[in-house]
Amino acid sequence: MILNKSIILLILHFITLSFANKIYKKQNKNNDEFVIQLKPGNDSCIQFLNKYYTSNSLAKSNQLLNDLKYKELKNFQKGNFIKPNSNELQSISFTDYYQLKKPNLLPDLNLIYGKFPQEVLAQMYEDPLILAISLNREFQLATNQEEEEEEQSFSSNSVVTLDDLSPFSNSKGGIGVDIYLYDTGIFPNQDHFDSRLHKILDYSSIRKKSNKNNSFSKQQHDHGTNLAAVIGSSQFGIAKKSNLYDMKLSNGGTTNLFTLLMALKQGYLHSRTTGRPSIFVIPWVAKKSHVLENVLSLMQNESLNTNHKKTFLTIVVPGGNSPGTSACLYSPAGTSKVITAGALVSKSKIIKNENGANLDKNDIAHFSAIGECIDYYAPGYKVNTLCYDSNYNKLKGCEKSGTSVSAAIIAGYLALDM
Image (cartoon, rainbow, N blue to C red):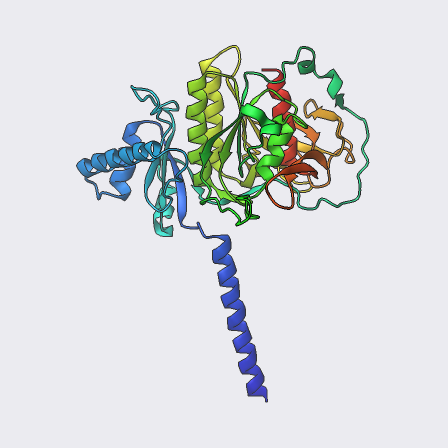
């Protein structure tokens, strides 16, 4: 009997280990994929390739770099509705292929994406050519899934009512402002978005339709539509006349660093061609990614250098739905010079988080991240917006919560003053 019990326990042990290993692989399916940021300059790329790929052959390194740049051009020519292959070595630059001379709009940015074994990574961490290394980790939407909590109360300490905000004095509804939403897609409803909605990019898998009425299937995630409605729909929107650009990354609640970087590149190139003031809303959150934060910081720096009077690009991100946790621990929330939003319970106030604002704990939604990296707290608890109906072919009113909703509100109000 003892032997039988031992065998049973051993079998259970192996089953548990096998299950745990499957869970680990599922949660870390990109654990050998990395984005490497090199020092500025073409020589850095050649030296990197020479050291890790071409066995100290400069001629082969130059040829490989030319091949990578050609691949980048071909990816661009395929359009924004075919996601680039993430299973091969790639260079990522912000070369503007819209222009004849093809200038690099972020010349100080050198990124290499690829699969690297642990022994090679160990060398890279000591390599002076490399500025940052980031795992191609998954990003989650900053939406709160618990919509049925008890109502929270709030105080009125250190708050600014929306009526007191300067943008409202002579607001033009955000006309002439382009808002790029990097999300799960926006339902193209003429009644709510009229001709202001433009689909620029779709990196999701092939859209699936249901068999009835050619409507969207339940696999379509409505988070992008939720935020777009808050930003600029005719019924619930703040900037009702702004242009909305649909940058679809996923059909579900996750994306990854590589996909996000490629989409940011396309949006940035597009925004530079229009010359209009632009806002990027990036409602995703993950553990710290220095590469992503460096890219966003360079975008903002270039915006300041391009126009000394007023930035042409503003980036708004959620602080994250991690109760009582510092937003600085997450990306892109911890990025300097972007605007990071935390969530309030109040639906009629915005709090600017500066000069030691005296925030009462009841002002802040219980799910919201906090800390010095939060620039504004905005409504984010049961906010009125639009959702799919039960047949997934129309939109209806609903309520949504999360710091991503707060980021959408901040983006809308910023558009009123641009």
